[in-house]
Image 1 (tube, helix red, strand yellow):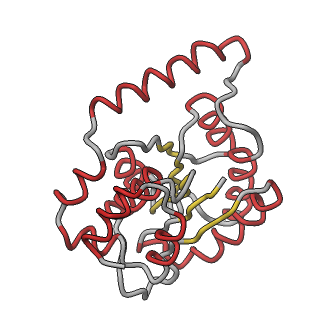
Image 2 (image 1 turned 60 degrees about the vertical axis):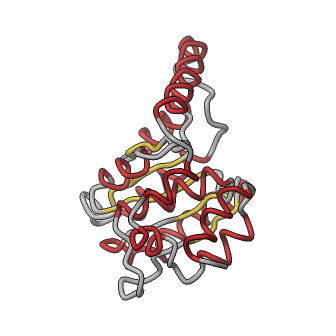
Length: 213
């Protein structure tokens, strides 16, 4: 699984620590981490949590990423921005138990964490435990065991509802404020990573029409 890490501007200074912790947990499991930044708080393109949603949706819908790890000060804004888009099911994760249950019961493809609120002494240890419980087993297996069948059924129903209530991403991107989208895709490594990993030609073409190659 290819896991994309995205940080918005208020918590950009924690990017290196978050990336290191994530890699420590998931790389031994055979997963790949692609760090889309922000890499520093001083980076030229300042990502807001709204832009995080645009970027996360583009990566997931195009197949450039299979899963997104993101967040903001409280984790709420990034979660709301991500779930505003098609093809993204993002959970707000505060504890390791949240991570385990979200992956098993909801089987989503993105998590948003609070990197400021409650992130004090030992915060990086809690972060490691969250990643261990989120990625340490196959998703969608259900919990508790007697609830597996209805949980898996409800997940399929929710996917169907989102497919009806959202337009295609290739229609959404050109309709957004161009500067908003250009900034979301303006990271130093975005073009290198996105065009390398993208599996959807239509989305790639839509992105290229807005920011070039």
